[in-house]
Amino acid sequence: DWNSGNVIAEQVERIRAQVGTGRVLSALSGGVDSAVSTALVHEAVGDQLVAVFVDHGLLRQGEREQVENDYVASTGVRLVTVDARQQFLDALAGVSDPEQKRKIIGREFIRSFEKVQAELVAEAAADGEPIRFLVQGTLYPDVVESGGGAGTANIKSHHNVGGLPEDLQFELVEPLRTLFKDEVRAIGRELGLPEEIVGRQPFPGPGLGIRIVGEVTADRLEILREADAIARAELTKAGLDNEIWQCPVVLLADVRSVGVQGDGRTYGHPIVLRPVSSEDAMTADWTRLPYDVLARISNRITNEVREVNRVVLDVTSKPPGTIEWE
Ligand code: XMP
Image 1 (cartoon, rainbow, N blue to C red):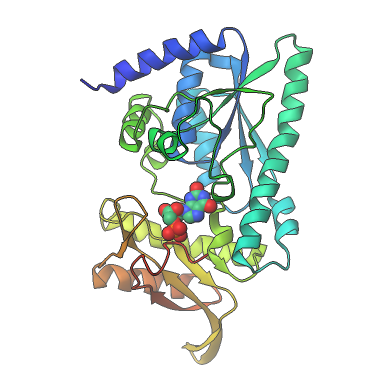
Image 2 (image 1 turned 90 degrees about the vertical axis):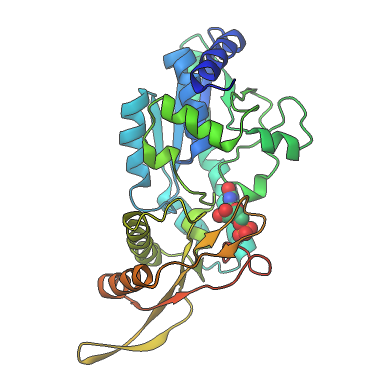
């Protein structure tokens, strides 16, 4: 009979047996799996663990603070944040092609992680206790999908920026390997993690970088972050978080349309709302959101976000449309 307290106790035992006195490295993405696997390992080995969070500048409003403040406060995990915002902007400059963006974001993520990893490894070695383990938030469905070899590192590397290089330098610690997503959330809640992280809807590894159709710039990211924050706040306020699987908010940065505001003509960008209902993201339907909620989101975004003069609704199922626009 499944009980999150038992699973935690059992995993803590296993992790201690595997790791002994060794040091452990972990990467937090802001998502559920890395947050819970890291918290479990911390529960087991305390300060033998150090967690790394790469701020690539493609995060949503408040996400870095959730990790740096709320997550750290609730777990006591030792956290190193890497500010790689400029590095990612430089690498993405002039690039509009979705696949190219994904590749660049994946590559820069590994680069910035490896840089801090090298520093932490050197520091630990000087301390006399080398880092020998790496935490991975692999879930049971990932194991099945990859054919299930023991210690299989992330298979969806190009599809998952949270994924790390398969680094033979480290032995993997994978405390979620037998669990499903809802079980992982239950364990996270039992461990007292912030609800914003544990209950978070799916968010792609490449983040807002693949929700700007066109080149990614600091200015455009700021516009999208504001629009996204408004849509999320209104959906939560309307109590719709459990009805929708996720709601990408997309900035059509290369499109302009004419509008009117006050006495003047505007020439701004459209924001697309893409609310979807789904069981597993393989197929999806567009969510029939209440008109009054759509109206509030639209009014607020066009009033509060500069450069945006139009909000449109994506009414395409998957297939043929993917959930994300890129
Ligand atoms: P698509 O757009 O393929 O998305 O219908 C299906 C689901 O996957 C998420 N997604 C990603 N998740 N890294 C991720 O970790 C990625 O590169 C990525 N691309 C899409 C998307 O948000 C949806 O839930």
